[in-house]
Amino acid sequence: MPDLQDFLGEPLPELQPFVILLDVVSVTEVNIRLMGTGLVQLTGRELTRTNSLDIYAPHLKKSVGVACMTMHTHPCGQISERMVNTASGLVMPATSVALPLTTKKGAGCLAAYTNTREPVATGDSMIVVHDIMSREWIDIGAGTPADK
Image (cartoon, rainbow, N blue to C red; front, top):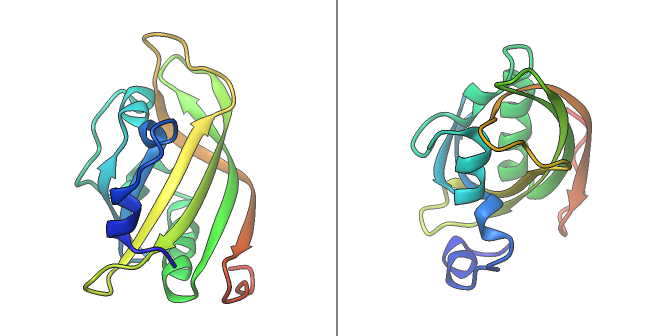
């Protein structure tokens, strides 16, 4: 697995605005360490140092928290297709790819790239992930866990 410092040391400029770094503390606490400027613009707010699970509808929080913890404890990634609601009432698809990173302290850290498949109108913002249409594990060398 790549190290957090290596990941931060050689960022890909075209991807960085839509990258979020997450600290996996527990299945109920997945804190945002760093949020790219494109994601700040997409959500209409700076969410660094908040629980990332708060942007999910209540019925999704547990399964997303479990998936985040699984990516840390069974090193693997995940790609997911989500449906998000915007402040103006639009519903649109978004894709996310998350991969684990190692840290010096051994804490759970994930790097995720997320973007909508359609542009969000100027002045509108994503307010909640209301459904997850599909999820697939990504084998990075340790195999994939049973679907949780």
